[in-house]
Image (tube, rainbow, N blue to C red; front, side):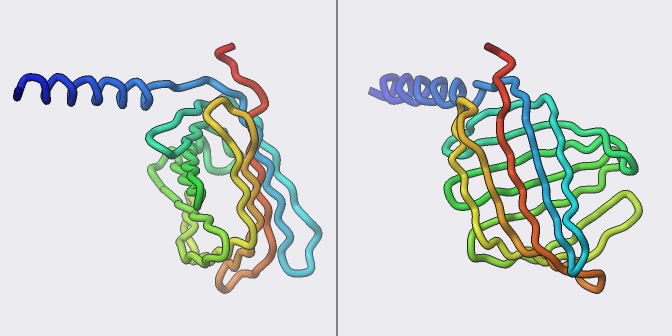
Length: 166
């Protein structure tokens, strides 16, 4: 009887590991738009090769970007039904984590290679219909306050352009 339970547990663990290890190479397009105070809108677009995978009920996007001033940035985006978390790591080990959840306010420190500053994010709208096949996209509309520097409205759009594995 104990052997049967152990065998079923091992079978479940194997199935879970297979779900976690299904990683797809994809082309990711990230468009960020910022408008601070009375300034004109500023838009940044990044297209990068990355990876997409699902672990349990959470989607993860991983990609690297060569920043002009900060060097390589490794970015991990964690997206579930309720929230999106963007985690950036610079070459020097500096990390920043941004959390977006509709109708919620988050305080964080935005860290750069030359220092950090306090930042507050309020997510006005979060639409996440991205799936593990790479269909759909993530759209975030949020207010940001760079304490002591300024405030404004920002948008972040993330989509998969194509699946490289196919």
